[in-house]
Image (tube, rainbow, N blue to C red; front, side):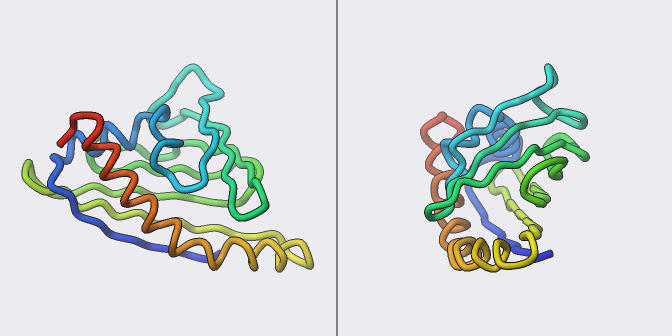
Length: 148
């Protein structure tokens, strides 16, 4: 798997940052390329919640179904694919009332063969830009939501 890790700090309190990231409805607003992030279970947060997601990277739209496998209020959210693109995402939150440190770790595996190499040529160069865009949009969304 290919692992990407990014850390950011914001002056928004941790409970507000966590609540915003944990709200599935906000994900397409701040996560780079995500056009759809919809629950497929009645449970929309926490361990056992499942989401269908679509992400556009270059000319390709990738689909995956993600299940929350670990959830600790104001500390951690772990999503792992159960169908589609093989990906896992770990969000970790730390800090104080004055500052929050958010760490995101994304592991993904592209299919093998010619299709995987072609997809890698699209996905891998876009990852660094996607992370910077996601961080910027997340902070902007927190501010717009009145969380700042």
